[in-house]
Image 1 (cartoon, rainbow, N blue to C red):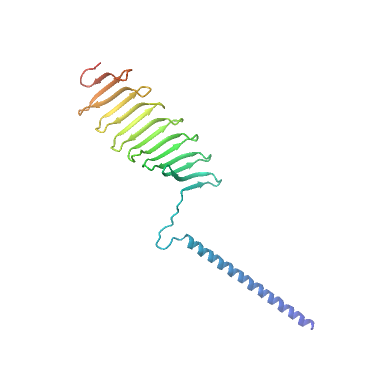
Image 2 (cartoon, rainbow, N blue to C red):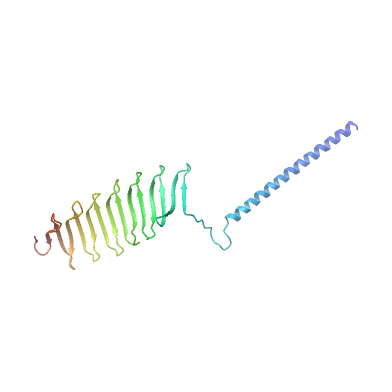
Length: 222
């Protein structure tokens, strides 16, 4: 075989090899594209709601929300027979809680970093009597407001142990102001009485009984 024929043969072999490489690359590209399309179609099939079924529904007994550092910042779960949602600060301390008991008592409470509840708003077990309580750093109620299901409002102030002052309006519309002694015994009550709304002042003695009674009409009674 002459040298020119050898050179021609080598050139043909190189051309065939290049053609084979191009075909192989096209085959891989088509295969990759087909696989990508297949996976995308499968993903859409998995996340798309079934025809006529509406939106997807996720069911679980609890959900935990974490931040970028893996710390728990929120938690939703069933507690004491009802849903309970808690929000945590960066030190893993629960700071705000939302809950609903199985009896219908709905509450929102805010806690300090030490875990003491400082404020509470919600409804009592009847689901209708609303209440707000503001507490001190020891968790003792110092100010409270309520409104019964019949629309009777009330305001109380305490010393951390006992109620010392209360203000309210009865179901018949009679307002009253009560100042109490340490321990909760009555000290002075100012209110209106009767259909005419006559003002009356009651002062209690050490024995817990009315010591003096004053009214707009009539004399002081001992």
